[in-house]
Image 1 (cartoon, helix red, strand yellow):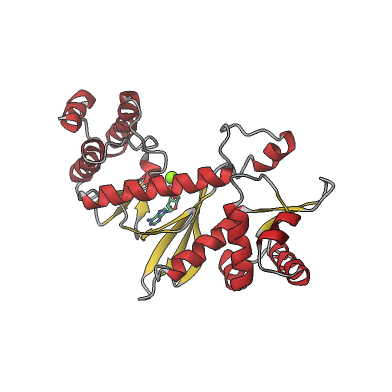
Image 2 (tube, helix red, strand yellow):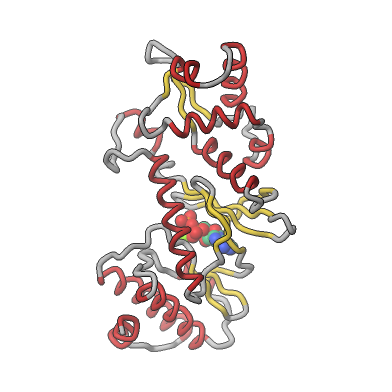
Length: 287
Ligand SMILES: Nc1ncnc2c1ncn2[C@@H]1O[C@H](COP(=O)(O)OP(=O)(O)O)[C@@H](O)[C@H]1O
Ligand SMILES: [Mg+2]
């Protein structure tokens, strides 16, 4: 069976399956795989019901079934966590419906969606370790230490939401954060193009100044450094640059700030012939 789009899968999950998914998520910190016996003991379902709901979640690929342990065990998949996020955002009246995928990175999937006033918004799902997940399971080793990929994805979503909230409150040019699911954040849709596409700018000096001022707000007000700043993480609309993609932001080393800045400065020099001195900008940002 081809995999259904995420939005369809979310709508096929009723309240009992939803509570089962949440049970598996709650137990994902303590159990790599949750024994079926534990699920049976700690949920309200009788064996027939449990069998039915597990089969349904499996078919929707929202859970994974391990049969090679000598006993049955299950774990929630990334799509399973995504569905919990969608339902949470729906319950808090943030997301009415999810639409199509608009961006896919190494550790995230970005979707368009609609809020309850039918405005288009963006939902970014964090999926840490997704690409290496299969091989991880094979060697049964966690390169991040003791934290699970589920925990890391949730923490990244929380970190990005917190960063966006602080930045937005302090007047930085970032998408307005709207809500937090489990591993997902809802935010304003920036209807523009990535700076990496080298759009024609009316006033490139002003665009660069706006970017620098957002970096300054991050540094001085929110005590963070983006850490992955590049023309790919800047969206431009009507000559206004919005910096996106903040999950890895941290109070990292000054080297990170220097690297972030130099990516942008050299891009503007090459593409828009604007020459700026990094040391001066650095002292402006720190000042
Ligand atoms: N708020 C937004 N508005 C419009 N497009 C967005 C928004 N956030 C992300 N995107 C799109 O999704 C892509 C990936 O998002 P990003 O936050 O950069 O995650 P990744 O870690 O995958 O790079 C972006 O390059 C952009 O095209
Ligand atoms: Mg990005």
